[in-house]
Image 1 (cartoon, helix red, strand yellow):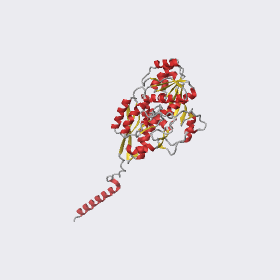
Image 2 (tube, rainbow, N blue to C red; image 1 turned 60 degrees about the vertical axis):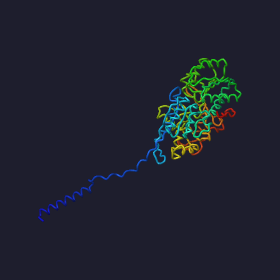
Image 3 (cartoon, helix red, strand yellow; image 1 turned 90 degrees about the vertical axis):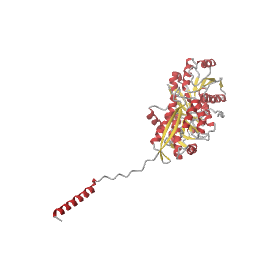
Image 4 (cartoon, rainbow, N blue to C red; image 1 turned 135 degrees about the horizontal axis):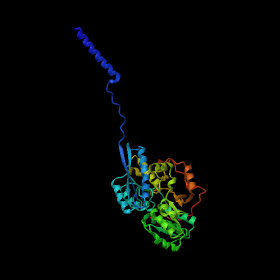
Length: 445
């Protein structure tokens, strides 16, 4: 081998070794990084919500929808896992226009869509017929505002409410009216709906049980804004007080026109007309009215809920948003506990759940009604509703005392299972008691 050949071999070896050296210094293609654990598959869960989103009480329907939507958004932000999958909740809103026929139409639409549960309806008149469709399809429904006893007296499976019933609310507002206004003659008017007529019936029964004379019933409808004929008749009979079973869209004009006719009676209303909108509809005539709500007022809901609601919707809740928020969370929590969105699996959990919500401790009785539900009494002062008393288990406590007791109870955060029953605000030894009333619970209709 010539020296030239040896030199060439040596040079090739050096080049080869140099290449190896460069490779050892990290110039080779980087190895792919080990991938992390695969994200869990998603589980899409649809929850229906039904309320009037058009018409005279659309503002109340939207308020209810907002409460449910807030619960859905918070659940998605919490990244809940169900059956090993990432649960993604979506709200399916429907407008029943406060009309029973439309209510059953949209209920069937939700049944066909195979929603996992339903929050709603707002009105008793739509909730009652719709409940039969949901129950027949094994879809649980929870109303945050329907108060007619018939809703849960039907004995249907999977039907719940998180507010008090009219046979609790009616006696509460009637007894408060008797205790404070001391009327001798009362006129009762209703709007001919399941809600308005049912509540008016309970008020009338309680008044008569207290030996108060009640004039023959006057009726309107849920779209009437001209009450002059009815009011002219009542003016001649000079009642000391008037109770109206109906919504604010019709109750406001009723009160305004009564004052225009110089009717000086004390006017009282149920929860459907217990809103700040009464001042808008009745003007200065609204001052001094009495009304009831079938639960705690929005201002007494949890701080967490109130802050989240205002941050999202740029307004305060109107009436029953805390209850629809709780209703949606009850469905979600029951699915989480059962580890399934299948109603057949989570319904038994829902029936026995103990839950600390924005509106307080929630436990259901065998009918699907909320145990120990509160009633709030309000008056209108300076254009704003002012809560003045809470009634629970037949006892009346000043609103300020109720708030103080609720704060002292230090309930668990909103949206988590309750560790223990909340303090019972109605047990204050100093709380004045409502005048006793006979058992006026409505029979099945």
